[in-house]
Amino acid sequence: MARLITLFLYMVAELSALQQIINALTGLNGLWAVVTECIVTTIYTSLGGFRISFVTDNIQGAMVVGLVILAVITVGVETNIDKDLIHSTNLLGSSLLGWQLIYILPVAILTNDFFISGFWMRTFASKTDKDLIIGTSIATAAIAIILTLVGASGLLAAWTGAWPGNPPQEGSIAFFLLLKQLPAWVVGIVIVLTVSLSTAAFDSLQSAMVSTGSNDLFRNKLNLWFIRLAVVLVIFPVAVVALKSPSVLQIYLISDLVSASSIPVLVIGLSDKCFWWRGFEVVLGGLGGLLTVFVFGTIYYGNGKDGANLMLLTESLYVDNWSAFGAFVAAPVGGLLWGFGAFALRIGVQWTLAKTRGHHFDAFDRPSPAPPIFIAGARERSSNDEEGEDGDHVNHTKASSLKGRFW
Image (cartoon, rainbow, N blue to C red; front, side, top):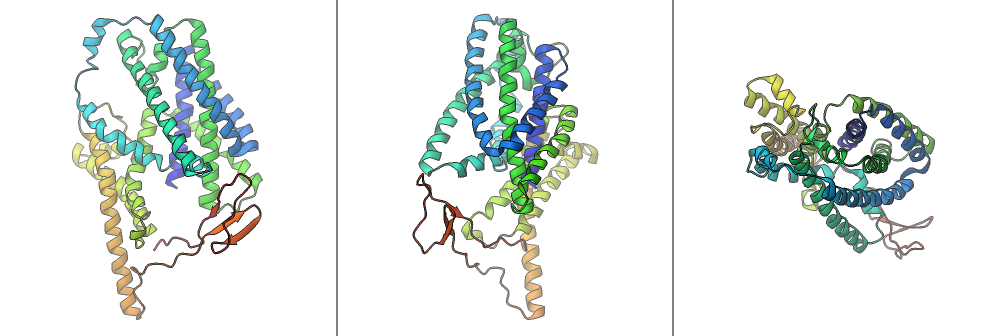
C-alpha cells in the first residue's frame, strides 16, 4: 500500500509540475496541457503496457540530453548575471538548511527509491547482473551531470532576477523561469521537450502503479481488460489532486516522509538472519514512525495542529528552524522503536498463548524454504533439474512458494 501511495504522489507531482511550467512559460492555463497528457498517456499505456514505457524512456533520455544542451548553450550566450544579486541573495553562504540537507536528502531519496516500482521493473528486466551494473553506472554519471547543471540554474535564475519573479513563483520551476528570459524560439522548443519528458515519465508511473496494484492486491489474477480499465480509472483522482496541489516539493516531501518511516523496519526483514521479523512489525513500525513525527511536532510547536501540519510538511523545507530536520529524524527512529515494540508485543502474546494452550513456541524457529522453480519457455522444472534458458540465454527464476508471515 505504501508503494501505491508513493506512486500516486509521484503522478500527482508530475502533472502539477507540468501545469506550473506551462503557466510560467506561456502565461496560459496549464489545465489543458494536463488533460491532454492524461488522455494521450492513458490510451497508449492501456494498450501497450510496460513495453511501450521502455520505448518512451529512450525518447525521454534523448529529450533530457537535448534540453540540457540547448539550455547550456542559450543560457551561456543570452543570460546576464547581476553581480549585486550574488551578494544580496547570499546563496553561496552557509545556512542552517544547507547543513540539514546533508542528512535529509540522502535519507529521503534512499528510502523513497525502495517504493519506486519502475526501478525494480528495470532491475528485473536486465538480462544479467553485469548489464544492470553497466546500466546503472552510466545512468549515475549522466544523472550527476544533469542534476549539477539543472541545479546550478537555480542560482542563475536568482542572480538574473528571473526568480522569484512577480508574482513570486515556486523555486521548483526556477530552471524554467530562467529559460523564459531566452528568445521565443528557444522557449517554444523547451515547451515541446518539457511536455515530451513529462509524458514519458508519466506513462512509466502509470504502468508501475497498475502493475503494482495487480500484483500486490490481486496476485496477478486480474483479467487483462480489468488492468487496462484500471489504467483509465486511476487517472481521474490523480488529475484532480494535481490541479489542486499547492507545491510539487511538498508532494515529494510527504512521500519521502512515508518512506522514511516505513523502509527502515522493512529492510530488517530482508536479512536471512532476521527470519523472525514479521509483517506485523513492519506495519506498526511504519505507522508508528508517522505518529512519532506528529508527537515530535506537537512537542516542538506546543500544539497538536502544528504537529499534524508537520506530517504534511506544509511549511516545506524553507523554514529557519529544526522542524523539517526533526521530522526526518523522528520518522525512521520512531519507526524502528515502534517496530521493535511491536516485535516484543507479538513475542509476548505468542509465548503466552503457547504456554496456556500447551503448544510449541515457534516464533524463533527458522522456516523451511521452498525450492525455487526455473522457467524455460512454457516448461517448468524444479531446481534439481537442468537450469532452463530462453532464446537469449536469460535465466528466469520463479519466486518461492513460501509466503511471508504477518503474525
